[in-house]
Amino acid sequence: MGEYSKRIGEVGESVVVDFLKLIGWENPLRNDDIDSVDKDFRKRTNGIDGYYHYLNPMVSGTIENILYSSKYSTEPYPASKIVEQFKDRYLELAKAIESFKKSELKQFTVNQHENIDTHFDRGVLFWLNNSGTGEKDLISKLARIELNTGVNHDGIFLVDNKRIEFIYDSISFIKMNFEKQDLDFVYFNNGLNNDDRNPRNGKIMPVEYINSSILPMRLSKDSETTIVISTIEDFNRDDLMKYMGIAKNIGCNAQGTTVICFPDYLETEHLPMVNNVKQIFNDSSFTSQLKVANYNSFLR
Image (cartoon, rainbow, N blue to C red):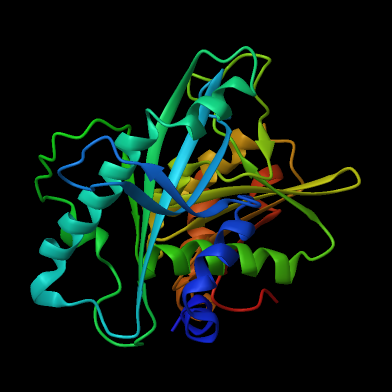
């Protein structure tokens, strides 16, 4: 069981607030009501569990508005009702976003920022339990369902037990093993943020990373820099080669140490493959300072 599973059991529904703080989403507006624009769906208001906004480092000149909904249970995910319940919860959040688009809250937020080209109105659905049994990965099971709600929004992200454990355990691993170093999230250059307005790293984790298979981070202390790539996928020789290339590109081959983290890495089993990939990579200045680790264990 991941460290975050234990955390879910310890603090219950407030686990989402703790998680948001961990990823830099500080002081969200919580438990607010937004006037409903669809009176047939909600007569008066759409309740939201939380709202957070930030300037999106992945798209220049963009405000990212995030409405989130927290669904928590002490029971396992209901295998026979997962699709039905997800559609209900998805529609509920989508309708809240629909109302938010015409709300005073959105207008006030947008008016507080200058030089903004556009804005995204998105949702994050946290669907969590602390049963310790049953399925943890809902995202793969829901990947192929059709969602024809007819509601206009810019995307809804699902965070299940597997996803929240990955992000929490990855960041906790870094904080525990590199406690004296400053942690930032790395913002990939994607063609939409390659101007002087956007930083290349920062304290806020972009919502685009919340369903990503990798989490790119940068650690710094004085003049030393460490690049960390953590992945939700199990150890794989080809993936290791790919992540090494990503890490080298992020650090412009100037970082001190590079750490690539998998959830199942075992040195006794996988070290020969790591050494083989290092030879194939053929850059000793980079590979000599490369470490592969398991983010579910202490780095020795």
